[in-house]
Image 1 (cartoon, chains in turn red, yellow):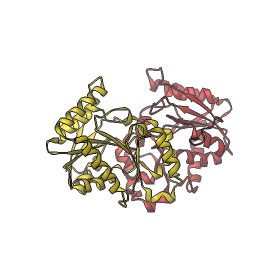
Image 2 (tube, rainbow over the protein chains, first blue to last red; image 1 turned 135 degrees about the vertical axis):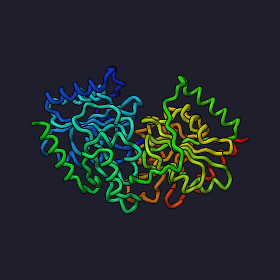
Image 3 (cartoon, rainbow over the protein chains, first blue to last red; image 1 turned 90 degrees about the horizontal axis):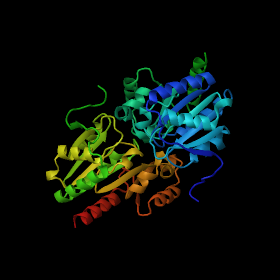
Image 4 (cartoon, each protein chain N blue to C red; image 1 turned 180 degrees about the horizontal axis):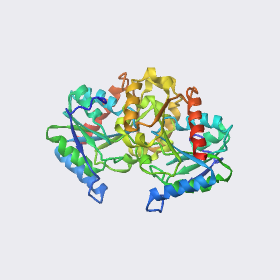
Length: 228
Length: 228
């Protein structure tokens, strides 16, 4: 059997949204989430930057305070939703995007309806691994964050402007491997700030747990401010 | 100064192709390349998988046999075209994609016209770092190849089917770092073969030079077969 393609988490297949105006749809979704008291975080990165591993570490801390759900978006497979369910015990679903390279607000709403947010405080949306297209479509999330990983190189904020402009938080993951790669942290930080002077940069190692406490505090602050 | 945004390589900005039928356009481009005796290779990968470093190593071998040009595609910046020019001495240009996540055949043709292929045997097109969209658009290249890097994880062929189905060669890069990551080489190979049973898989370390000789032989074989 190719990996463990188990059936124990729900998988839904979504298609391109029928709404012509994604921005308007995203604003409506944010209003809806506010009414329901549910904070939605959109997590973006390249393939393999460590979104799922980071989420597992964060959720195992944040679940002490919040009721959490996770929507895992991928073109194919359901391995991430299974990992989340196994490693954290929180509600998770897999969204398969019918080949699409990103999620829009309509697709996100379909996922939220499927996971059922009536008993949740916090939902993480793990977007398709892609530094380009997901940044172009507002999902309706309350907060956009991203992960850049050390092996990808320090020049990514130069090459992929929009995602760095859009994200309030940049986690720099796999910091424990920095000695094996040619990564100039200061230079990278400088270009991230050039793209978005308000972004918060937190170096982490999702595998080793380094920096996770700082990200947890960051999220709690954002969630509590939003609730007021 | 933010990095060395030098002007010493040419940068062109391309827009979405006006052609309605990209596949037909790509076929026409392949005919044109055959007439001119120029072999075009489309190189795809995630951001930071090591396309530029790999190309530098390959070109420094292949330039002993062929006259080479390189087209570097990115949404922004020209750092890759500069690296190629500096490290290999071959003709290189930067294609900026106006925010687009991929290149189509029309954009590729614009790049070829700009670099001037009349004195070239072999052109490498380094596509935008993205495992999704570039695979959906035939660039008109004679050969599609990709790089997967160890830090991205062994589950990528599960999640990004099309690029693995489409590529004749999968280089697995950063093999020298395998002990620091949780990467099951055999499992990965199995899923790559499931996506495309004819694909050739070559583990490499572009940084250390490991496996580069095998990739060089692979390209020479492909180019010579195509020329017959």
